[in-house]
Image: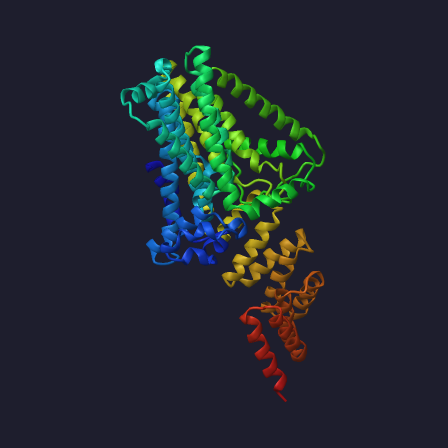
Amino acid sequence: MAAIAAVYGRTIGHGFAFDDQMLVLDNPLVREPLSQSLDLVARRGGGFSYRPVRVLSYRVDHALAGGLAPGVFHASNLVWHAAAALALLSLARATVGSEGGALAAALLFAVHPLSSEAVAYVAGRRDLLCGFFALVALRLWWWFLDLASVRSGDARDAGDAGRRAASVPRRGAAGAALGGAVVAGLLAVGSKETALVVPVLAALLAIVHARRQRTSPSAARARGFRLALALAAVALACVGAAVLLYPDRLTPLAARASQAALAPQPALTLDVLGRYLALALWPARLSADYRAGAYALPATALDASAVAAALALAAVVGAAVWLLARGAVAGAGLLWFLASLLPVAQIVPYAEVIAEHNAYLGLAGLALAAGEGVSAGLLRRPQATAAVAGVVLAALAARTFVRAGDWRDDETLWRATLSVAPGSLRARYNLGVALVQANRLAEARDALVAAYDVAPDDRDVLLALAGVETRLGNHARARDLARRALAERRDARALLALGWAQLGLGAADAAAATFEEAIAAGGPGDAQRGLELARRRRARP
């Protein structure tokens, strides 16, 4: 917890950034009273902004702060991250073989830079909550495995956890552990739908537990059947929760699965998984944007980068299977990392090629693998192992401290992104918008012109640049940009941009007609203000 405070404490002074505007500031559900929280399950929908457990956590923050105070929301993120790290510590103590290895695993998870996107800005709460509840579910699942082995007389070699469970026999304890795992799994799914991988991770831990037992074949088969039923209960609960909560999100997945990928497969998926692995092992260049333009997509079905990624992934999987067969939790941890990323590995195409926050739960698996490695090293060369682990953790913490500062506000974030991905359209556009909000119009125009150079037909860029040109007095240029946007779609936003440009050019009659059309199309109050101003100018002699 001290390590988390040291590397992330500065974020409490940060403001809202990026998707915080949509998910927190502009989200009416956040401002509703806690007494209406049960309605969140009934009010399904809202696209990717709907994740009921996350919204509930925002409501708690809003109630505590008495409003939308960013410091409270950021402090809450740190609390959830610390809770997830402690849950991982508990699981690691039960599985990796030593207190030192368990502490190393928890510290690695706590300070790893790849977690910074989930921790350092408020919208990352989905991953923090999903990670915490998933880790709690898996810790309870391991307890259930211990209790099940004790009840079946298989605890002779179950380790310290098995002996502790055996020393406190309690009727119904196994059922309570399994029930707790199911409830925690449901909360994980309610935080983020990718928690559907929890049953897969539970199966990996069950294999580790089984490989550490010494039982007769008949006893092993009977125990395996009981565990399969228990695992099926966890899986059915998670799938059922996802179907209940996210029908408007899961239904389109089947249709999207048949759509053309962003780039040729299997190169794209191999490249994505390889990049996640590379970022976990060497998190030097982190970015808030990995979309096309900021991220180089493969051009063929199998290029050199994809082959290299495939070889690296094959080595990881091979090592993981070898370790798993020997009952090492490191094997489960390596496969855990890859399994948790499969839902976001572009098998089903979507625009965000990579998002660092998606690796949050997967990092817990890598941390378990590293923790078992540290445990083995402490047995052979304790001083050297402790020194190497300390240096690695200190270096990662320093990188995380720097990266957390990038999330201070929108301008800082997008400037940092451009330093890593200069071709990022999203970074140039969002930087321009942030500068407009700061009323630094000349700088905003430069940023938006740079975005225009990258994507001259992007409608958002056209309209944002039209607004800046109008405010700078370049009305003819603003009119031309607005007309180009209108040629694609005639909506209130584009009509509003055209109306202000026409008003600046002195065409009051045309501006009034345009503002009237914008109001009819559901335009904001600014359209009414523009219409009144156009009518006053038209009435002048």
